[in-house]
Amino acid sequence: MQLSVAEVARLVSGTVDGSPYLQLTGAEVDSRRVESGDLFIALRGARCDGHAFVTEALSVAVAALVRYDAEFDALPQGRALIRVQDPLEAYWELARCERRRRGWRVAAITGSVGKTTTKDMLAALLAPSLAVGATKGNRNSTLGLPAEILSQPKGVEIFVAEAGMSRAGELDTIGSLITPQVLLYTRIAPAHTEFFADLDDIVRAKAELLPHLDPAGTLIINALDPHQRDFPGATSASVLRFGTSTADAWLSDFEDRGLLGTRFRLHLPSGEVVVELALAGRHQAENLLAAATAAVAFGVDAVGIAAVVPTLEPAPRRGRIHTLAAGITLVDDSYNASPLAMRRLLEMLAAAPGRRVAVLGEMYELGEQTAAAHRKVGQLAAASCDLLVATGGEGAVELAAAARAEGMDPGTVHHVSDAEAAVRLLNTVLQSDDVVLIKGSRGVGLDRAVDALLGWEAA
Image (cartoon, rainbow, N blue to C red; front, side):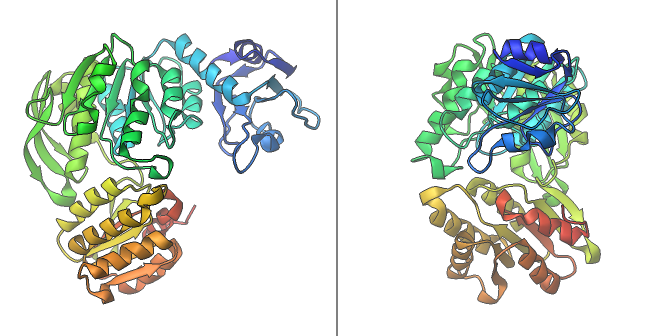
């Protein structure tokens, strides 16, 4: 964003307190993340109201977008307020205007698993030949994504956006913000089931992006996922399918090299190449296949894709592998968890040599499926690991109980209440050459356990 306060006020039908000539270069909804040049968006949330942080934010930010009736102490020198009826709606409209003004081609990545990794892979595959901007981390919501749109640097040609949801209607809003030319679905599976009656409801919510896809663009669907079969009928865009040998793109000659990654042949509309991927697990190879199919839609050929693959590595907290003292291998997948993602990582752990240790946190936002989902993961853990540390509340209790019921030695199954307790236990039970997988929902905070084991100071 390269706009003055006055220009922003005009776009969102607002009024200005302070200087209208100040220049804005980005936007942020979290007062702790604002940078010089930002517009702070003051939003009212379920737990707190961003208007309470406006004064703090304006110690760094240039201006704040606030409600008409909000009252503050004296405005700091060289700062401005843009007053509107509804800051959230104004924020979204500003993001829509920026997307139109910049004229990007946009790739949207959605699904229930693999979104962030696939987004990062696609951005890397496009970067050698195009000027690429992308959402950071998993800023994929109706709150985080507009800030990413409004904070992209000059010169971006293609914007790669992760699109996430936790409730129906959110992807419809996101679609209106990004209007993609390429829309990629990874795989749809139970996630955030607390907010949906069943998997069919999740599928319908994921389909909310389809009407926003450019009719002259490309829809990319996973041929292995039956929930996506009807999506092509909802758009006039061209369609590319990936995942099976009868699709437009698929894998063959797959060689699982455990924690060293995988080797396989990529079959793409633009040619065939053999690649070695350092990210472990077949699911990561499938993420690369999805990203490569989208890259082809932007004109990148198979040779160009193969040249980038050796540089790919997992995003932080998403499968990064560390070697600790005494030859202990730590697999950090602590960022988040869903039932399908848990299964995939446990399958990878099961193939590892040595004693296998699983530190599994609760999975959140599963609603009525919570108990059954944790029991299923417990059963999988019993078949995949030699030592289990279930971390968290009732879900973790269910997980540990299911592992014992599946025949796992009770002496090798532990339940602890939090990440700190998990670390204390691990410090007493880990042995040379163990392979340790750490995975759980973000709220469990198992990233703190990873940092403690690595000797880092916890954030």
